Image 1 (cartoon, one colour):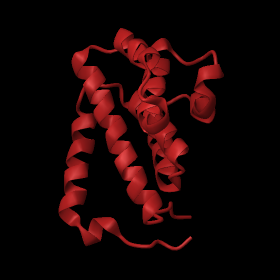
Image 2: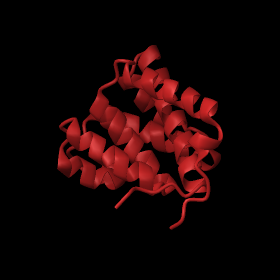
Image 3: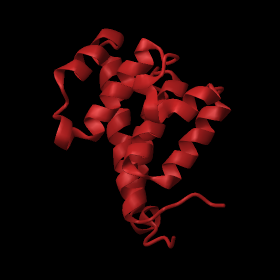
Length: 146
């Protein structure tokens, strides 16, 4: 697959702004492995090969359970995800697919039970960020190197 356009090169200030939000999320206090699970699931949904590869590798480096990474696409059917992970992944899916889900009360209630005000907003920023990166990656055909 051929890259269509290097978006970071074409509009570096926009890329820097996304990078600042990425840094904010990394320093937000959310568990880094949880963030990568969320990033991975969002990227799977959106079909962003670059981000799937990147966040799988990042999660492994941070000590994520390989079994969970392998099963994140079916998290809602697996017994080994914590309630906090389930809430985060459910909220991530509902916001990623917001046009069809309309962010249902069940997903919000589950997330609210696991996250305080700041951490729920930070989680939502992470979800927004990864959806933005995925749209750039898919749209401009960014892909992992061999």
